[in-house]
Image (cartoon, rainbow, N blue to C red):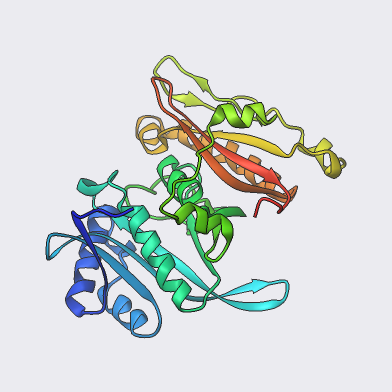
Length: 299
């Protein structure tokens, strides 16, 4: 996938990082303290970090991805990885595939460094992020952090706990290489998963005002603890189709969704489930669902 309207460049000059700093203020508006300053970007890139910019025309920076070398704990001891800290796209250039292009460029550069895994965090209730990270890029997840950053004061994150998925992107795996190949994979929709026996364990309801609300959980975690060998191979977990719009209209409902899905994901990860896909249904009643598989064979 390429787009002649945008040029991607590895960033190394001081003026580039000033542009990255300023773009952060647009993408995550509302609080100056959350911005990573240009001098930190400069210092880290000169010592192994990677920052890639997307330019519209010659000089207009409209997107960037930034990450740094990291040490990950594994069963075999510490291992070198790459931590992707920020991916930002200007609001005027969203829904153009720029996030995918930037992550693909990051994937190429990290592979050249000889690193096997890229990790990053994102809010599991953000449907657009899930479509990119899980469905398009092929990242997987079995790690849930409660209130990972504490209180963030930008407009996107204010007033709600900063729970996060930490995803693993195995850059040399067949799974990821197939997702990033120029030959598109057959995309599985909800009908495919339902036909395979997957069940939605928290089907949402729809209020009169059009906002979705979480219903009673249809999964017995206590019973599942004693039946590890009999767990369903696939389960589906629903989230709001547009969490930020829902949060703007009803903060208490947004908090209800946060606590509801926190209980589900923490419980499923404890049982050995792994997020492996994401399904988005368009229409008058748009729906968003994670696919979780039991065991690691899906890797």
